[in-house]
Length: 326
Image (cartoon, rainbow, N blue to C red):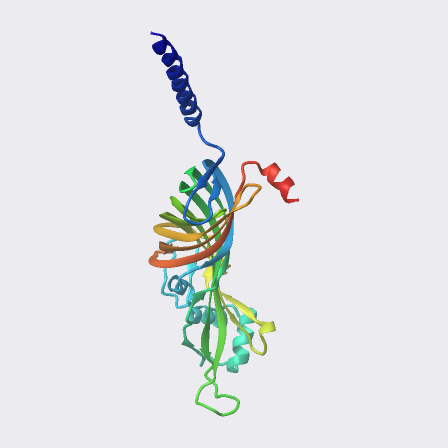
């Protein structure tokens, strides 16, 4: 009986210790986790809850939709607020209807006042690389799992070079036609909205590979489309607007801008490197590729686009981070 009485309190004490330990570990862990391996052990801070970030990077659009601005006049806007013209059609309007316009003077100077000119060739179009800015929010359950929502804004410029046959002989007498080349440009705004799943793989302490996959929606607004022409030098260039507003009976064609916005969908995937600051917060460098359905006017293209961007995930204790950094 004496042995039983001595054994019982010891067992109760041990059971209480196990219950206390279990109770402490059942709460969310906000500290650090130690990862043991064959090499040096390291730790990383747990990550859960909402985080917000800022994106800045470079966006590269597929060249094919840029042909919407090639000056052929074969595309339709599908918007009553504007009309798109071909280069030769607009030049003919200037020379026959707008006699006081500077473009008419340039054409007369290039062709000696004759109507023997013609469009020699249409341009090969492409988009310039453009800056991308955006906002990002993520809901983390742990450092490896998160849902991500991103909104990015891009202003793109499509460019090419069109050729004019003046109908004259070259100055040096070489060849049978004088061909001059001038630039043509189109401008648009894009808004990309993406939602996806993010996962990561720890590389070393404070650094990990991160991967995202998900869906993307894009909105495209056509802003401008115009060609340039000059007689003597580029400094005297005149603008030939190919995107114009309705005349409303006035007979005057004014430039149109910010026409109907069209939405399209697609998918995306990204891969990058995530670096953690000691004071909190993360910096991510990501390369993203997306397969988008892009709609300009009545046309739709499904093409690949790419972006390389840097994201600063703002720490929840922003004040502590700023004091520690400065």
